[in-house]
Image (tube, rainbow, N blue to C red; front, side, top):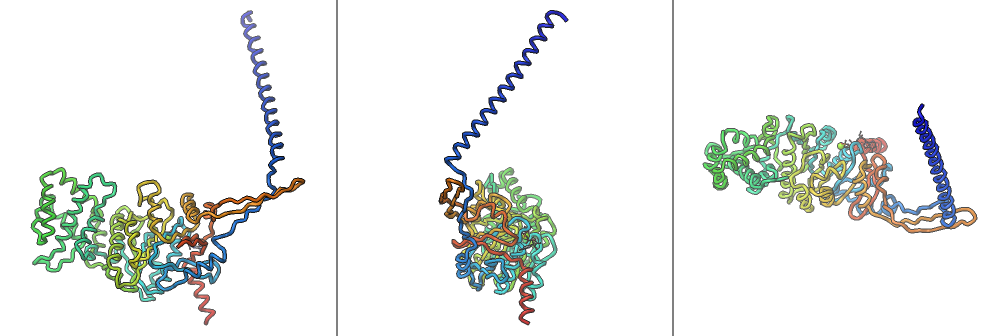
Length: 500
Ligand SMILES: Nc1ncnc2c1ncn2[C@@H]1O[C@H](COP(=O)(O)OP(=O)(O)OP(=O)(O)O)[C@@H](O)[C@H]1O
Ligand SMILES: [Mg+2]
């Protein structure tokens, strides 16, 4: 080893000793610091003793006898009322009914008991012999209820555009010029519309075709066209220009007038191409034979619902959502409009929209919800969370705000998501809570403080028992029981055996 290497080794050894010394010093410094902080806390806690026990005095405002007797007194009207569950889960708990002018939102994640409760509501409604419409996307509700409804004299109509059940002719229920325009607007969507000219002109085209097919001719003095005929008519032509030429020969003045405007655009091929593309993409669902078959002219008419004891099940199956979403959206929008127009001289028709969040977006749902109050059209919407409502809004939370804002009754089962639980906790509101803190020992003391807390905390809503539901209606909030139909049936059978 050279002299130089010996010096290097010596330097390395002294550096190691220095590092070890520094680590030790830092360790001792922090140990001392922690000990001092600990002591400091001990001294502070002598002045502010932590309570040995704390009593929170919080009234159970959702289950109190006063609340329940108020709900019972105000909401026990059976006549045309809609069953909304029981005041408690006890056997014989009083039944609650809300008015037929109300719209209700029911929220519960999958498997919490919405549909079994809805079926119970159907059976209660059937006692009134009034008609109803039920969205059945699983489909399951028609299967469960059919026998019982038929035994009560109900006529059950099942519309399923992807299976061979009852047919429905959209065009058969269009009694006025405006209703043709309305259906054309519903079919040719305006959502996320980048170019309103294409949309509006495509609507005019559909409007003109429907009116043309509905106009009597020598050959067809009483035409009864269907959407399938619209498809056949359009596919007859190899260009939009020849289609327009045919429409300009129509027997209807109105059709010729619309066509003249459309023909002005016919000089611009690109514009015309875009209009036709908008038309075709919105009517694409007509390409499917099964859908066209379901739209036959010999289908049922919504007029049926103006009579009592008619049950219409809309089976727009979840699995076929992609192909039928447009038809669903238009059908429910059209149905609402039809019932609104024909609201006089008929009994209330109840609309159950189960799984509405999993179906396509309904054309102008919020607008219609806001106009049906006095139109004998009680409407119940069943969702899995407020998030599903977002498709009815653009800004954050707008969908939930407009939908929930249009409903009179809000009801939820055990929730999973925080946002919906928070919405309900805030809706129910806060209450003043007294907290009494007591310390034991030599310097025992009592401290009283008043605080504000949610009547029901979001986490408590996420822990509700099966069947228990939180209700908010006309300023009253309560915890009730949304009884499943089979439990009601069992109890009725038991009652029957006791009577006999
Ligand atoms: N109160 C209840 N007590 C015990 N079990 C119940 C109760 N209500 C419903 N159930 C059972 O829970 C299951 C789910 O019920 P249901 O289909 O009504 O839920 P859902 O909320 O409609 O679910 P989804 O969103 O998946 O359609 C069913 O098997 C039903 O029998
Ligand atoms: Mg269900």
